[in-house]
Length: 588
Image (cartoon, rainbow, N blue to C red):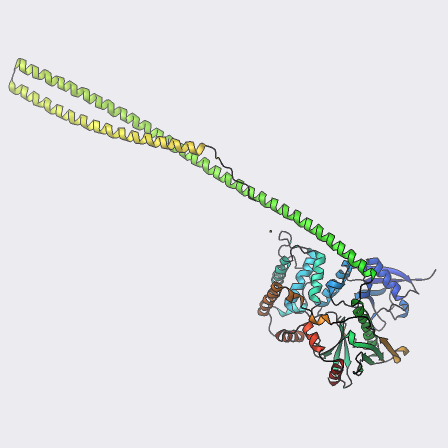
């Protein structure tokens, strides 16, 4: 039985272990990995390994795994990584697993500064990363400090600003709240749509020299080959789309590019080590093949994948809409329930107030009844006193008449009678005055009793209205950069490096209108988002530490000031014919 070799493959979010036979080729191992994780868009990916000299290398598909200078260890170590990038992630990346692997790798590249990202865009991207992990913002769940253990911003951005983690969280949370109802899968693609507009996204850089010996950077990406000055990897100076390149070849340290334009001479550059040219050749052939493929009709497999992905996303959207509907209904019911509880509390308060008013009215009524009884008793007493005085007055009149009669009859002493008469007369006068006073007092008490009786009637009416039930009930009430390996490589290369390697880049049968030059930055498409980003940029500028700007920060600031972006620069560096741009490259 053949001896098996153990291998460990690390993806961006998992580790896989396999065993394979010594005769297994790179393609077979890669296909086994892809099948295990359900990856069908295999043309974007490759397996990386560290060779015996400590250099990162891509596993070649048509060679046996064990013949490719893989570092000898048990198990053998490989990484599944993105090798080629699409022009437009939203249009080209189909499967969710593909989008997730791209998202995780690009996010890691931004966090480690392999891809330069300005601070305000880093905050926006962090909010999409949070949405992709936590889902929709929920203030009852995502309370203060919910991002404290998350790695969301590049260390450069954190070091450049005098902001605490809580203050960074507040700024990220503002954007997180904006992504309401966005699915986690949608958040990953929104992240990539913004990330792909960054200048260093998807670019593989290599150190080169032109014929004059000028140190430059060569950038290879999905759209073509660009030339950068040594001090600036953000802004290329000369560009050649894949549609203008007919052939690429290299021998040892020299790399030759043959343009399609017949009037243009071939142009060449030199790399530090022969093996670097192998990487440039691999990337050129792979990116050119995808460049041509994108400009042709999709094959049956891709059409089926797109149809299936569309159906799955439509199903998720329907499920999300249904969930949102149920959630809204539940929130409405909860809101109505809370409203009813508030109304119940209000009614209870009003009932308590009515009860207090009733008790107070009953107390006042009782007090007025008591007062009326006292007044009534006083009135009776005065009437009795008046009757008594009246009786005494009548007795006096009778006595007066009797005395007068006796005076007439007896005619005793006139003086004595006159005195008695005067006495009785005075007494009568006094009694009459007393009677009149008592009558007036009785009248006064009678009037007071009437007032009290009227007040009592009014109070009874108020009490009756308070006690009567309410007629109306309240109604219920119804929101890679893979840097060139300036390695410590020795000059002993394999014999094949001394031979010439060439590849024809066929472009027949495609129509290329260079639509990428007319593209618009994703954030500029959304006026509101663009304004919020500008406001955030101003806010972060105020919190920036002095003297902490990096070289890339200064380059980016100059590009913003000059109104340049990735696609405007691309259009600028492709002006003129191929010959003019080749001459410009040689003159650098």
